[in-house]
Amino acid sequence: MPNILFAELRQETASFNPFPTKFEMFRQMHGAEILNNYEGTKTEISGFMDVLAERKEIKLVPTVSAASVSGGLIPKDDLNQLLDVIIESIKAAVDANAIDAVYLCLHGAMAGESEDDPEGLLLRKVREVVGTIPLVASIDLHAILTDRMLDLIDVVVPFHTYPHVDQYETGERAARCLLKLLDGGVKPEVVTVKLPLLVRGDELITATGKYGEAIRMCQEIEASETGLSAGVNIGNAFTDVPELRTNVLVVRDNDRNQAQEDAEKIASFMWEHRELFRAELISVEQSIGVAQSNPGLTVFSDAADATASGASGDSNAILKALVASEFNGRCLVPIVDQPAVEQAVAAGEGARIQVALGGTLDPARFQPLELEVEVLRLYDGHFAYENGLPGFGGRIAVVRQHNIDVLIVERSLFFVGQQVFASHGCDPAEYRIVVVKSPNGFRPYYDSIASAICAVDVVGSTSANLPSLPYKKVARPIFPLDDVQLEL
Image 1 (cartoon, rainbow, N blue to C red):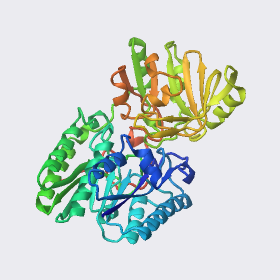
Image 2 (cartoon, helix red, strand yellow):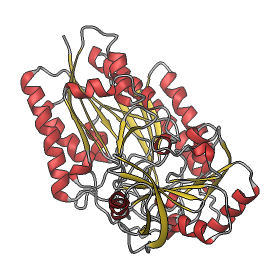
Image 3 (spheres, rainbow, N blue to C red):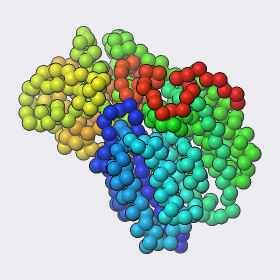
Image 4 (tube, rainbow, N blue to C red):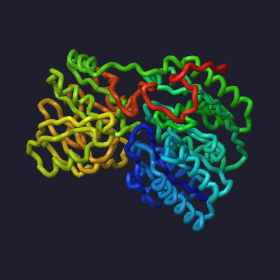
């Protein structure tokens, strides 16, 4: 009976967010708890488990799942503690079982205060424990795909959609690759082409943009006789590490020449269209004007403070503009502000309080905004995201200032879908403006109810205006920070 060990480590780091991601911010599951919590979800692990369930002779050996909301750099001691927990669990599983293969569910864009490649370090430690048995890893398309990671993984399986809606399917693809390796007779030939390219903007939307054309080339490769895996990993533009770039990845069975030809073709396509991969932003004042002339819901994308990309979530830039404006339609704004929640809880529902909102985590960028608000509702912070996984924002308060409702959380959350609002009594369809802290991931949840979408140009640690960010480690030159001449 083959035994397949699996583990998960997921966090996306924004180097320009000054608030660190600590050990205790990672939600952990252990052993059978992973199976129970992931069953029936729209996740990589669920897809992986469902494929392997078709092979009754296979035994799954779950170890650790550790996942955190995107955030700042991980301190050295916290990262070491996190990796130690995972490795000790894997060691215990190896001692108790003869492990035949390994699946790792990774995000791939983590960074520590003193370690630029945490996933590569994890993989090295895993290999020291399990040896040379087949190892497959699924990754986010924003992963920083390092040379060390590629050396240690037999087959890398990246997401194919942006916004991400194929997590479950990616888990299925990873499981099928692992089964091919386990059954024998497969020789993965891994080819990458490295592009000095950072990309943003709507052309990344795979259903409509140029990036989607590149992904469909990758899917044709995977559907071919020798295709194992293919993708275009664009990296997380806010993880400032030396190997941040775009990588074209092609993995074929025993056909390196074809894999090289495929990768070079896709890389040439991406580079040829590089000028399209810039975000088109408009000012907050223009965005309010759009909402003023639009009778339906206008979604404001605050990509600059995108908690989904690793920002602090305590920006009040759009909130300040809405308060100062003459717009009188109902507005919904999220913000991370633990002291404000504490004040609202102490006052209780129905109370009116004077509160300072914003700037508690990234004070160099945001100054607190003094407001008199009514405390509408208080929550314990537990809810479920659209994919079925739990969310926890610490205690949560919903307060109102005239026409503006503010969802205040103690801990960072993904302000991407509708459920984070609806679970706390705020139905996005009932507002004229809803602010999401996401560059494009919100679209699957809002396209059906939004009359207009504005990519708002405000300051923040994950601004799509990439030249405005203080890069220090990324290899230069790189587009669009520099004028790059590249022959492909």
